[in-house]
Length: 138
Image (cartoon, rainbow, N blue to C red; front, side):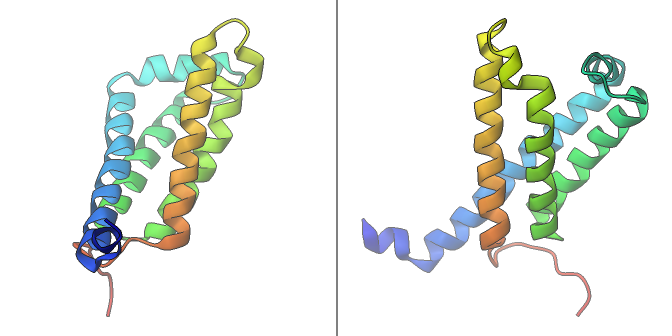
């Protein structure tokens, strides 16, 4: 088993699959947010953030662009790091420990977000791999 897991073909394709899965999570989420932008704005406002309509648009577009960057491998480390920070930031006002007593599902959502942030940080630290990625410039 160790031979398979250490083989370059496995690691290269595992990184590609990880990019696709992680990036798709954000692209799909961003598209869904665009389809319900008013609801998202209301949710943002309910957490006490100002300019909720503008923030809703920014969040949706950011998720789509950053998710696509992960998939195609452009600005990969920047996209993964920014998304990790974003996920960590939004987890507390929307799913944080203060909400767990009234809704145990919020704890699950919070912990899921922590796992996503951990995966993004791991991806930022280790890079995108060399398979099927766009290259800008030289």
